[in-house]
Image (tube, rainbow, N blue to C red; front, side, top):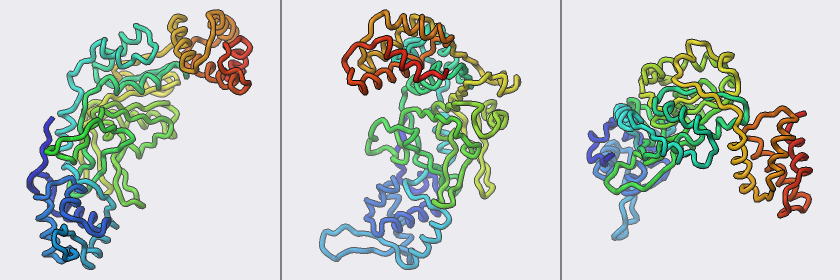
Length: 411
């Protein structure tokens, strides 16, 4: 995708008022700035920024500051009048950063980067999940589910690997996308780029619009800490800045709601919030001033829960979910692969008899099924015990393994 730098104010798609305001905020923040420095901060060409400075000079809001020595770069600063006006602006909107892109440009960008008809083949899925041990049956279900782009419910007992699996979904879709630093809804700026979810992939060429950041497809993951207001545009009264809702940050990627049913609000409230976006692939948002707008809802929405789905969702909502995938106990040969992987991970030595002891004595006598968390956690505890007792480098034995089991399991 080619996103050229705008050469004129009109090509930015932004109002003159917004850019004048943002220019003043940068000058207020830095004290004095040269034209190149200000252009870098705004991520706009000098040919766009210079007319803004000239207009602010005419309005007696900006003045030229220079030491008078030959060859010095001309620097700009706010006048006393400009400082007063900038402070007024800051009290209403604290955003300071690159110039935004208009809402219309954002919506077109998201639709152009949508997963759409990009199909996942078996080889690609298996490569993305190569650091996991999963059954061929799960691959056979998961591939079509992700290709459908429909909402997905993954459920099963704790420890079956639901979160571990979902963490890898964005690795399956490995194309680079562009995420804007911020968007402008009329003259309101909403920051969007979030380094917590948007990972830069490469530097841009000089002629590319630096208001956009090249990123991996995002994975936004939330659990019991999710609040309904995180799904709306929020205004922070302390920073005086807006924040984008989580589903907006997840656009063109994966949005995982983990631990469904353990939030502080009912699952029905969450489901009601998602019905329209899931059906229309469009989300409707509003600003505190009452301005309404819509954005594309272009992401794979994944729900994950340890609870029985029928106890937290009604049948009507479950029908709206494209696929329901249950993660169950593992076959012994897959469980053994996880055992071996974790022996390597913790640098432990153990013979075949110790694995049989784990399965035939510890698991069967306690009635606990073979799920992925046990080798990882119990071998980790075994390693800790051996290091504490000065046994690092010695073979793991039944007594230590049983001690680790008893420390881990509730009896």
